[in-house]
Image (cartoon, rainbow, N blue to C red; front, side, top):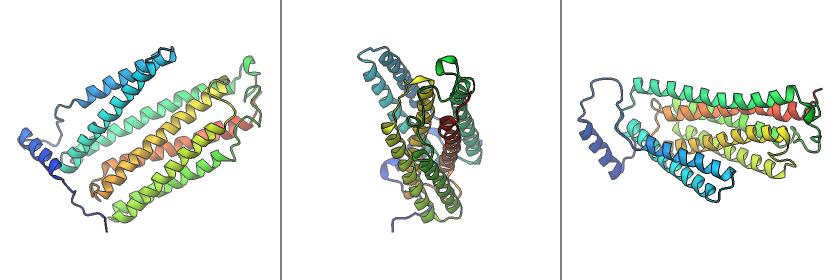
Length: 296
């Protein structure tokens, strides 16, 4: 059987990295905090983000090389971020730098990150409610705007309802996996995690099919703009959360997550529940309320 001893499987290269790092720091830390060694990845990621932003702006203004610069920036961001997170995993798993004090600080940092993500969605919903609760005369003074009847708006009882069920079930499976790993049942934890990943992929596929079959686009009035921005931004978070869970599944497979040390997996679970909760708001207000009620 392939599962899961509590000792991480260190290959020769990783062992060499661990030994070199220990010798470099001299093993002289006398405090509870982790002083991070100099790293090129924050600077590299920031340069990649700058290239992505500049490329996107040029693409929107019809510069021929804007798309190439955007793709180049995204390649730099993904590559550098992967290397950065790899180093973080090594620090916590192989080198033992993430003690209880460090893990507590990481949790606070991740909570603040999730709060910042919440504010992104607050801004999009603010735009949506600003347009829908007081529709202007250009929209026909109604919501959905003139031209968006039941044949155009997406029926909330079809694919959106199925996606809601998929995400709710995925929240249950990821909670089951978390409970299992805390009970030292790594096999059940792994299978629960795999089920969650499959449900996340199913959600993304259904969302893509919905976009392809929709009869309106992002340029169709403020309704299309807010609809695609909110659902697209949420779909992007689902993709990121699915990748996050895939990495956790791989680490669980490799024996890098234990009953007492699985902070990265907890972060993935928090992030996934955040995605679940946001979707409930998306379904309620965009699909059900916003598509079926006409406001005068």
